[in-house]
Image 1 (cartoon, rainbow, N blue to C red):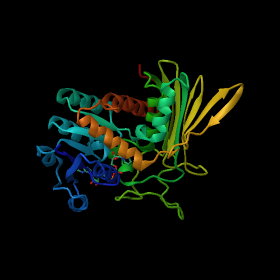
Image 2: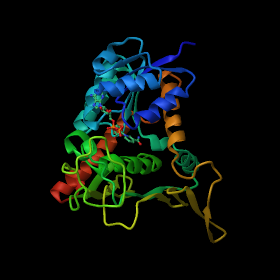
Image 3: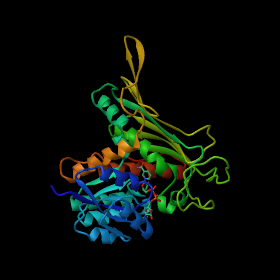
Image 4: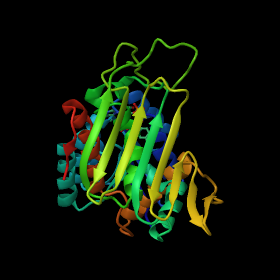
Length: 353
Ligand SMILES: NC(=O)c1ccc[n+]([C@@H]2O[C@H](COP(=O)([O-])OP(=O)(O)OC[C@H]3O[C@@H](n4cnc5c(N)ncnc54)[C@H](O)[C@@H]3O)[C@@H](O)[C@H]2O)c1
């Protein structure tokens, strides 16, 4: 069988996870890569043995050999590139967040409908072993009805700067960068309930704290200590039509003791912590039990998570299944993220039903 030829657009940090996972897939050929930075495009093409490299994504999309693309560019280009790719007849794996606004998301949905290609949103945490194992317990009824979930991802110090800190290019700060993952994990495990309302707060209190010394953290290539237009922390309570609620808090920086990630769901038969480690909590013979599954990784394992995501995408490209992360889910996530910002600006709860 001929290999599926893929192109990767945007060749920064996260593209390495896509490239490595495609390389591991026996039915895939990394055929072309593209970045506005020509040096980067040439280097990645050499490293990953791609036949072609481009600096303009339109040229890559015109290449009829290519069946599917991964889009790993800044968030402000996601809508434009994914619509162009779908209209060029390519299947699309688009990094999270789907885009910057609900309007853009709806335009992507229209392109998906008219092209009839697969568009998979990069909700990679859904493919983590810990999430998938828990989903099986939830689907078999062990947790009961989930009525409450909690998603927290706190960095004491970790505004990456560069495009991440430029609201124009990113669409927002920790909420859109980190919040999207933990909110989606909860929403997905809760059974994707319909949104009702959101009460959120976004704070610009501490800036990027580029003054801090003796503590290192990841910085984007184009880091500039003087440029930062995104919030440093956000929190929210999200209400769903079925009565369930989700509480979230995320930060790029906060006067917190340490970095933490904590994601939990609570049902009427049991509960579960997904992060920092999968743990199930139940009740039996009038005793409360904490159960730790024996699995390779209790926390999110990046390498396995991305491999499962890419394997799933390729299987969809082959027409073997429907994607687990369709555009509709990307739209709902954009409604949540932008709803939190809107509620914060208005200083009141916003209705989304
Ligand atoms: N799934 C995850 O866990 C995860 C982790 C990190 C980043 N991301 C997402 O991946 C995307 C990229 O993030 P990153 O950390 O790799 O950023 P990055 O800055 O390291 O890389 C982005 C690359 O895109 C290129 N680019 C920008 N506009 C382009 C265009 N129009 N055409 C071609 N190339 C273009 C840039 O030159 C750069 O090389 C973002 O949407 C981010 O939210 C996802």
